[in-house]
Amino acid sequence: MTMFRLTLGSSQREALAAKVARASKMGDTRTMIRALAISALAGPLAEKLNEAASCYGVNVKTVKSWLKAFLLRGVASLEIKKSPGRPPKLTKRQKEKLASLIDEGPSSAGFLGNCWRSPMIQMLIEQEFGVTYSVFYIAELLKNMGFSYQKARFIYDQDNKEERARWLAEKWPEIVALGKRKNSYILFGDEASFPQWGTLSYTWARVGKQPVVRTSGRRKGYKVFGFIDYFTGKFFFKGQDEKLNSETYIRFLKEVLGRTRKHTILIHDNAPYHKSVAVKNFLAKNSNRLCVYPLPPILRITIRSSSSGRRSRRRGLTCSSSLILKVFAPR
Image (cartoon, rainbow, N blue to C red; front, side, top):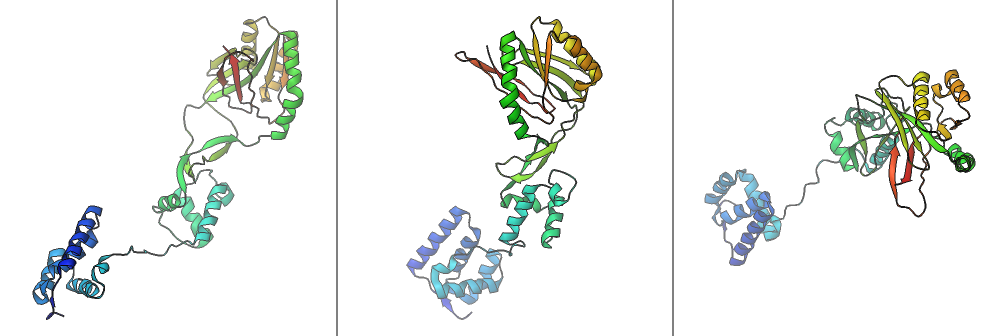
């Protein structure tokens, strides 16, 4: 082959030049180098092979293989097919099963936490499929499978939809009728505790689908009692550093009763101190002004109200226990 003399016609030179220009524009360095090397081989090969190999930083054998392909297939030989790369360790079906396991959450897979971490998923893959991935590759694998690293949100783990529907259908109309008849406040009450440390963490979940983490609703930190009226949106609240207990709850009830002369209907949940002897005695002593409707156990309820024919605005009370209240009240 070294005695061979390569002669390029004008059409071939133009085709090679066009290939170089296009490869340069597209950033395809491999194709550009290959086309330039073929162009440089025009003439006696004995003088050109080593020179082309040295100029473009490749082995002489590589240049010879480029030349051989060019002689057989012409400019078409310069098209470089994308390398298929190493075969994936997990099959398509295995990835589908892995995605389902991730959707079910770490606790279903036998882990103690509720948020996925790369080492946990690495261990899960090894246990389920006998395949070992680098922990640093897990993030890329999950992204390719349609997952993203997101901040989880809490949901109450004992929500009872049937009980909630029954309460709304039977008890709630009774309460509203009584409130209208006595011109009462209907106060929804709850307590909030704002932690002064810690936040929800991030976990792996499908893109566009925020993960949830179950929680008991227990909080520590700054405490707030709150009542909000169904009819008017009037808001009573009290912040404190003390614990939420019978003593502080009775103190708040006294403050609320001291700020109004209206008959009051109170709806609160089944927190232990709501049912304490001290609170029951206080409610009994003030039964002429205060009527209490406890929510059924483990009931999470959302109530919306608005006055017809009047522009409304939204006022909200966010609580930490089983009652979540949103009220739309008139200006």
